[in-house]
Image (cartoon, rainbow, N blue to C red; front, side, top):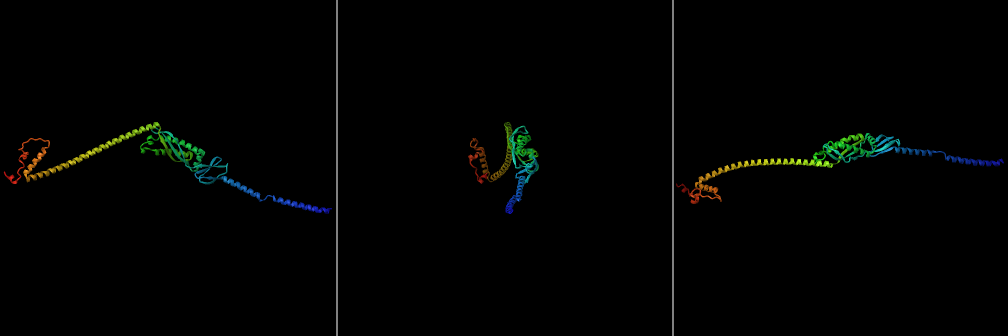
Length: 341
């Protein structure tokens, strides 16, 4: 009986050994291998990549990036490209706009040096100075809020307009004579007053200052019109006086030239007359020498032509010269007869 149970025991042992062996083989398939460690490695790499990505900072063109550490500015990145920082919450990146901006003062009622009022509006072109110190100064002054910076800049410009206008007369700002207007000097002085102050306070560089609008209140306008009218009347009076002076000078010069010309003409006429008398005397002399009786006749006729005109009535003896020739006729011009005693 013992033998009969031996095979069973053997079979049972073999079966048990076989199960045991199968179980041992199955347990070997679930033992920790390289796969969990690989997954943990990938997870670690992903975490490191996420941390690295969170640490990278992109600096755009036209901007500066301020790295703050627990709220305080630590450093400034100015060059466009990629930078780095510690992950949040250790460090935070804050972009600061470096582009050009313009701010208008609005209409300001200010007084001039001569006690008149003007209404003026100016503009300022500005930008944050692109260097570490001034970018941090801008951050501290307005907490990186350009609108707040523009509001405070308007206040500065309004105060500077009042001071600048007090250095100019109204005629230097509003004038019909363009050469008297000094708007460029006004703008230069306004810029000089605000430029250094804005740089030191806000880290802002002023690029341009200009006058947008300049007008006059009604009271100032009336006074200005009266002043301009008085100036124009003064100019008109001066020009009228100058015209009269020039006319008098021209008239005097013309009269002087006329007197000189008249004197020259008189001298020339006297010379011509004297020459003509000399020539006439010579002609008379030759005529008398060639025919004395004909000469006497012609002279008598010339005398009659001088004395008698269409309105002249003369009663004279006809037997007296020079009328005797009218009765007796011309004398005998025969040379022989003339030589008879």
